[in-house]
Image 1 (tube, rainbow, N blue to C red):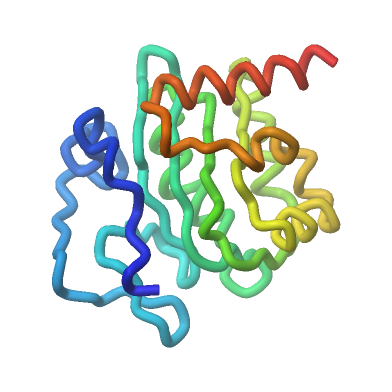
Image 2 (image 1 turned 45 degrees about the vertical axis):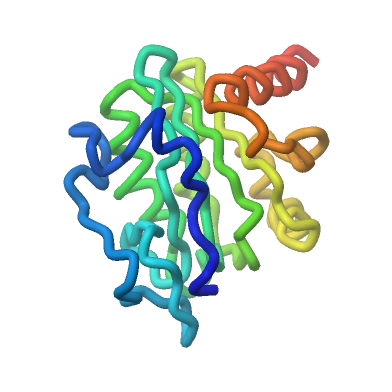
Length: 191
């Protein structure tokens, strides 16, 4: 796991540690000192810790004028033991929403497991973005993690699956990814 890095090819467009509105503003990173770990596995030091013991992320891009953010997630999404959704909502999402972000693209191909608890934070997040004409998508979930989201009925708070689960996002720049995701969102919302 220590060799798995967050996507870095968009650093020419956006760097969260240089954005005064980012929850990770002025955070300093090491390329050589591995301090964070998931259970007994060290992870790459470029991932951002936001309070969860098992889920880490990287804010890959934020477009304040359009009101969207692209976040890459890594680890185990464990609401049952660690209430990861609470930390994600309070420490990252709310900071971004306070700056006008209402559309969230979560890239979750590196989320290895999902353990559900209650849905109160999902419901809160969904209501807040819905009231602001926003939405939340999750892309590229592993099949078993998608199944776990659906089994827990958490999928009702997100737009996920279908073409969003097979999108080759690394071949796009952030605006192209957002346009492709938004096209899928609009198709589903118009049904």
